[in-house]
Image (cartoon, rainbow, N blue to C red; front, side, top):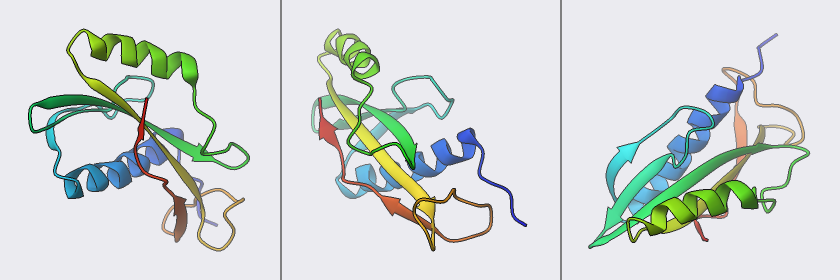
Length: 119
């Protein structure tokens, strides 16, 4: 039987999903931080506007819409020192056949990514 993805592996998967979206939207990556509980995960720029992006991997029963408002406000306050906008990017992850089950190594997964949310 395959193992569940670790918290760090889920975080990295969510970062890959968000990173691809940022790239498609034309953001330039200035800094990337993939360590758990280190925020923001991405510092990006589009035109002359710098942005901080907080990425959160969400697994059932948590809801993608539930935001850690204290954390996001802390990052937003830090970003304001740099005239940066702040985005929250939650990625719901579940097993490929049943979203309510955990993601397993070497098996398909399902994602629910509503996109960047301006904070």
